[in-house]
Length: 136
Image 1 (cartoon, helix red, strand yellow):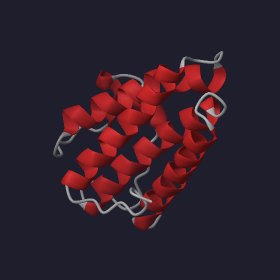
Image 2 (cartoon, one colour):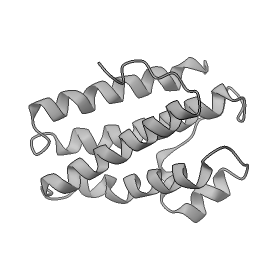
Image 3 (cartoon, helix red, strand yellow):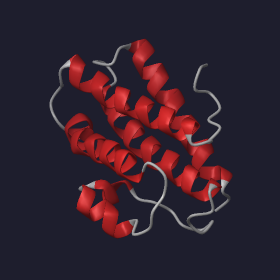
Image 4 (cartoon, helix red, strand yellow):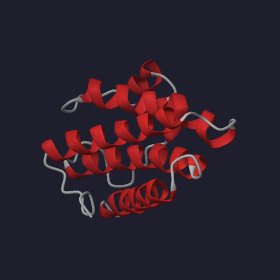
């Protein structure tokens, strides 16, 4: 896998989230759940590849973030803002199945998961990851 692939995938997910917000979060709950989940992991993978912390062939999986303990077992190395990043992705994963497979959720719940994605974007950018499409 090319190092650029997870960032390209992230931007695709971000575009879908933005389109879903435009259509109405209550109408696009599943799209938001799937794309915020996979996008947050792609974003972390992009950062770890950029910093050469993981090998170019390494692919992170969203289910690694079912808990902070599990994520820390899978990512048993240090990187900047590790605790914040892992905690945000774990919080996203806690809502993923509810949004993707559950009954309709409150608008605040859906917006909350989107806000966590934007927090990850801000952290990633502060660490030097150039994310195309953030302000489009």
